[in-house]
Length: 550
Image 1 (cartoon, rainbow, N blue to C red):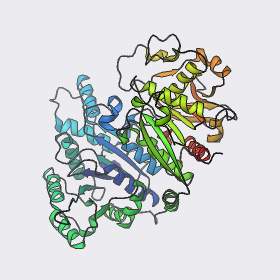
Image 2 (tube, helix red, strand yellow):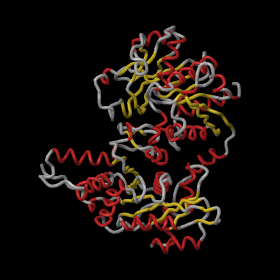
Image 3 (cartoon, rainbow, N blue to C red):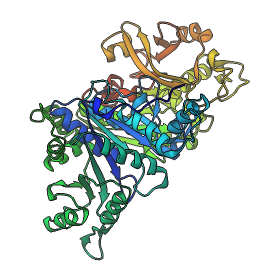
Image 4 (spheres, helix red, strand yellow):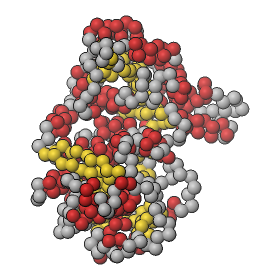
């Protein structure tokens, strides 16, 4: 079998931007990448972003949310890093399998090809075989003619052992790509020492030194800081890091991540990039809609408190897309949404009143496993019986079904077979095609599926149409053997998959509850700044009305 070659860099019309980070993790490479992409998009360029993660997992699908935050799912069923959520929310454009690559996926591909005999008996090595596969994937999105600019975020920190093959691949590409077709942006930290009363540049100098030792000279430095960077400090950084002074970009802490594009515009990050890449054909940035969103976000006329009931609430990133969806929906309603996180393990029928006191709505979050399940059931029962707006997502929908079966249908032992394999009333059960699966990674119902909504239902009114597509990530489904009993008792299956008949949405009518809607899918994965998700928008509106006593 002939060896597959890396796509020729000269064959691409796209420009490539590589974003690296130093000093410490969690500096915000994803937000800087998304903000730059937004600015270039606002100037008329076609942009996409991809994330290369150095861990050996094939994808984040089997990682505990406490390890890596939420697992973001794309339309085509990729389980990806949460930064892809930022990319989609900023650009209002979908990502795909190609937008997130891990070390594990790279090695898996190379090893499979070695087993197939693709390397003709050669010794397979990190250089060139692993780096060639990394380069192939780095160039992939730029080969199809759909994008003018491809931004590649390299996970981890410069100096990490795991990141070295990625950095080496970028070094090689910088030599192979035509002049002015690529650049490197390095994100660093300028720590403020209170005792000295000043910012310190040494960590940035050391980080750039490590980058240069790996063969990469940054073209632009983005410096995270709590305080403005004095002009003389910018000159010092430029001198010691071998960059132009106008390529030292200040990135101050922002009140919201959605302010960062405007801060980067003020710092002329996009202008520096356009000049260095010699991009032509753009126009002045059109950010009116973005500014209007920020205006509504920062000047709300209402305020509501929403309880987020889940078992990973100690780590906000575990529910990142839900939190961001509330920001989008809040701005759409000119409302500040205060999210009160409630650990479902600590919630019981006895303390539900105390735990949920004063909230204007309750969202029961997605999740897997038995831990915290009964607490979620207690939360749903409380809001259903007390007329508090409720929104259930994925497991949250399944909990709503179990709660209704137990306390309305008179099936006290009803449950999901995920929680109780021996339940006499499996109102939620394992999908037939899942029963023989032993491999856990990437084997759930993943990606976008169609859903047909009943005319006149709350869900259909929220969406403004009857046929929708939403993203899924689950193994268990509503058991249709119980469907007629639920509908006879008042819980309507208002959304179903048109091909399989699987229940996608359940709801209670307005005559018995102000807002009670739950979906098997993950609507939070499609909410963006420009298109807030309609179910979140209606849920927040219901919370506002509930607070006003309407």
